[in-house]
Length: 153
Image (cartoon, rainbow, N blue to C red; front, side):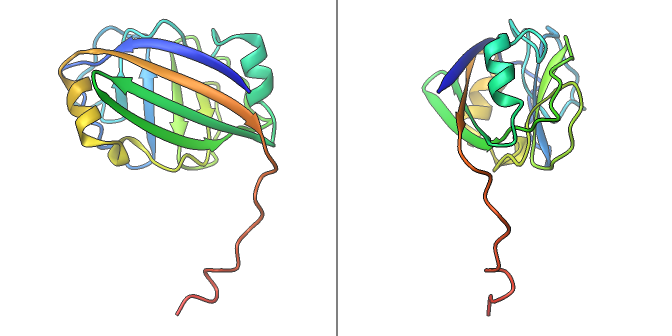
């Protein structure tokens, strides 16, 4: 397992209501329309993650876990990496429910977006407290499609 820790802080305008992503930015300020941003003033962006982390995450068999901590609150988001990830953005990092990839993308197929995060955590972030996002990469085969949906009652 390879891990990377990002330090940031919450912000009074964190609403965490976006349905398909959440984002961590290096910007110190955000507006109310930034409904995907959960932390600001991050010490890292997609391109400044370590080379060993980026190499591990840029693989189709990468399983990524993001552990978000703020105050006494913690939430865990799991998703996948991809060989198509480029980690070129120096501004932010985006965690996506979809499989869309750009230079800001650090996770695809996330099991939750901003809207799904623990509300105690998002309240702590909205109070401006210090935050830590631990990113872990392990290698596990990507699951194939499931036929369960076809056979649901």
